[in-house]
Length: 148
Image 1 (cartoon, rainbow, N blue to C red):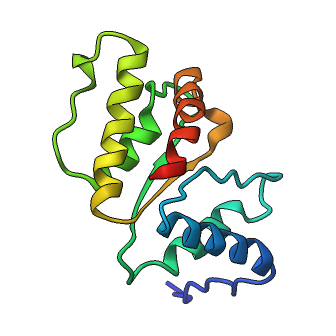
Image 2 (image 1 turned 135 degrees about the vertical axis):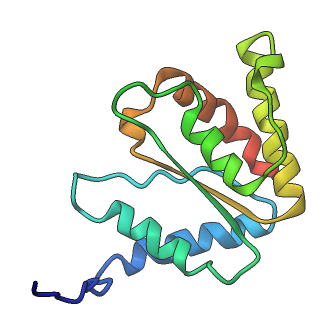
């Protein structure tokens, strides 16, 4: 058996995009949160860019939650709830909410509670596979993040 070391190619280019993400992080630290969409063709390095950004925060006070949209059989709000579960271990029961609006408010309240205690970054991977409910939630959440 021949064993070869696994090499991770150096991060080349994308310095401008990485700088933009860091600027948004500074704004978020001043309670001016928001959404950032990283888009591009398959294989151009979107995930690597986000990974490098998150890696730069590894030893900071920032909590990072990551959720992925699945191509098939994704549950409503799945990636958001997955990411929130990584940054907050408190029990969270969405079934208690009777309407979609109440569910949205419950998720926003959870974001607010976590963000009040610590700086927070939530990454949603593969948004092109998101279900309609997750997209609705992100549209609802976007304006509310401006003061978190």
